[in-house]
Length: 496
Ligand code: ACM
View 1 (cartoon, rainbow, N blue to C red):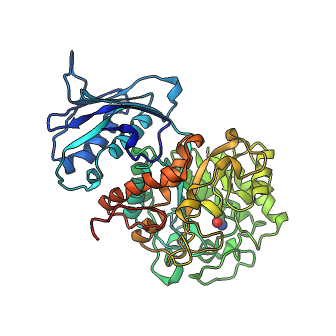
View 2 (view 1 turned 180 degrees about the vertical axis):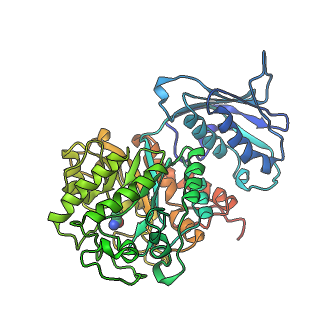
View 3 (view 1 turned 135 degrees about the vertical axis):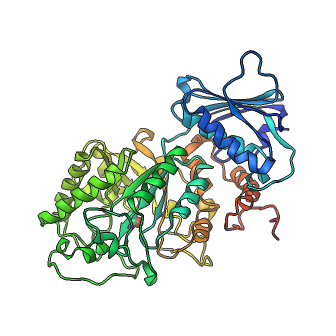
């Protein structure tokens, strides 16, 4: 077998094929040593057992000569690989996966999954043989932040849906899920000190459905589920605009204090907190405080986009003050690119989505930039004019357009070191179930995975297109409702 012919996404940093293969059998053991190795080995065994029917015990390394036919996962220092890199060596005699940290072992496991035939993803008994090509892969990411965003405010998605999205994303080595938790149409995270946010503000969604919200226990469950998969949850409270659901729940946050009706349409830019009222900052301090306590990761996203009814002279001091609240609660600020019009605190990150000049203003202040240009990375954009779901205000984003751009070419004067990473947001005005998320995310998300992980020099649409085609059967085995783009020569679907 030829390792160089296996369709890996994202493409590893380096790969040497040695022309033979390793066969997984019912006698294979997984030897795990070092912090995080057992968890990575259990993840691998957990994905292989239901399909192969093998026992695949995860145990400490055998004393002496362990014999052939086994898989070893081992923490081992290797400064060149960094916190997420790994080395995977496959021979007829066995598989050895080493990494300086548990995250690297986890990503090596994701690569291993892709080396097996597609049926490995079926989750139910399938016939083997379970053979993988031999060689060595040394691999590490281009960026430390490889993100997806899910808007759970316009339409609410269940804990189960979010977990499934996490599962699908980590298979492609994404390590951040940004949750857009609040917007005009809904407030989706329980805040114990302001209970009407969810009682009232969480009670509907776009189109007037019943909405919903995460209790703090459910939210903690999502955070923990993600952490077990080396994924960080970045929570967003969008403000001072996109706040109608909060303003309905607590009219005192509004300048004129009047009662408002819930909003289930899809307009933007009509709401604002009253930036001059002290109660607004007391409210934000409580919300950020409760959310920070639920957030083990470093980041808290303050939104800041499309505040069209907040005067600039009010917006700027608001953003400056809210950044201080985030810092007080021990977190680092991320905001949409408009926040760069304010004075940014040290360590702030500007998420470039619309206006490159705003990103440049952030750079001039020493901020990092998270690259999310709507015209390339907004996966709520339709593939083409015939796509039923999604919008088209930024562009049609077919699979080639989603893949064929580079983060370092998006903002004048930006360098690789200024870039925190990339993120592909999925706004939910037009989608309300998991199958819709899958349709817009696949097959575009693997392309963003490659942009975020693989060396820029390896990017090539023609070869990517072929690798992506080979992932069609994997999408099917995983039950993903994907868009069969006509730009990709998919193998005939098993269901067709
Ligand atoms: C945005 O799309 N309003 C950040």
